[in-house]
Length: 286
Image (cartoon, rainbow, N blue to C red; front, side, top):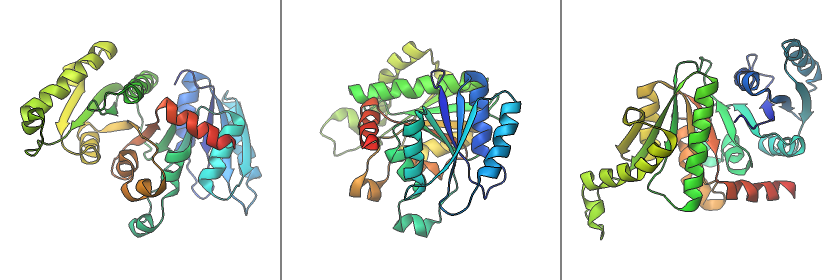
């Protein structure tokens, strides 16, 4: 996160208090990143409001530019501007969708998570991050190269946020319930499954200096356990990875990151494997 030089902040004029701007200011205050404020609206002129916001931020010592743009949809507009400005992070406030509408249409924020080539911070809360818990969710059961790199990125970002907010990093990994039908006897007993996951976590713990008190290995589906642990620890930010699945399977199943988004009582930072970021970058440039 320290390497991010420019942050795209999505401003939504109908909401007077911009939580996205509040979080972006916190990050830029520590990293000295440039703030690019975007209003996505094809109908009304918001340059006056953007001018007022810019003047106040510049007076506070921030480096700021502003823009109003529109290209077909909000998520597409955000990605276009992110590409044009070379922003390394997108910060946007998240508003829960109506469940019926969500069942029929893919929410805009889901599309943004799937298609944006950079990390996306979706802001849901107004409370301070200071002295709170930052919860990094990893899946140690997937230990291929792509997942390992994603896990490292998740932990790195978790530590960065904990450092800039003077907060505490905790890590959660969910493991599957025992399957009596499994051909592998390791997956038939709860104790052996958990032991196997703990063993896989040891390398992480050694590499990232995470002690037992800050590591939570729980049995069950990740989309249930992550919100449970966020609530239990009163976490301020959940850092999670997504495989950015799109197409019909993505629309029907949804990624854990997407399902968790409306369930957690925290801000959510969503990261992708480098390979997927590169593919999305290529798509966005065409």
